[in-house]
Length: 260
Image (cartoon, rainbow, N blue to C red):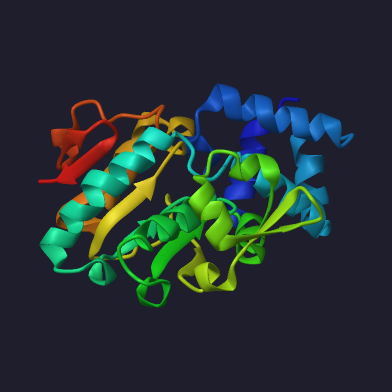
């Protein structure tokens, strides 16, 4: 299939998702696999089929965004957030309910709901409101439903599972409406759209590894502008900012960076 460049341009014009800003080799391999799996011989025939078939289009977006998510992923990092970072933010803001938090690639909601449950140790759920965004509207819809497989909650502290979830059908877990009301879900493309402003904490975990260095630079600089002075950026366990001061950050803990 020789029409990948044409496909990228057509898809950008239609979706404003720039595939050039994803790592070329792995992204092209993933897309080729999906195109062939669906029985198409060229990228453009697949593209035209997507425009006619919303389910196929949604499948592609979901596949593109690599939605691998689970609650309390890498527990030691969440413990650091709870025991060190949140108290630091509370000290600066006066109380937990004034902390402005953005889960910037929220996938199916596991991450922002985990943040809510942690914050609930400091403040009532009725006082919590965080922003959660993703490029994939299908993932956002799943997040708003709040129903998860048992494997998604396997690392959650039992206290959270007992307090905030109801087990249905034996191996499905539904998160409480009280927790769901704490999260404002929106669609947002990190490479195209305007970022929320005056954030105290931005969480962006296990997403940037799929982007080119050019795209990462743009996102780091945009995150910096989105944060208040001394605000915190929380990255994933496979990510770190080399030469973080170039982007206006300094490391304060492993995978936590502060705006300088």
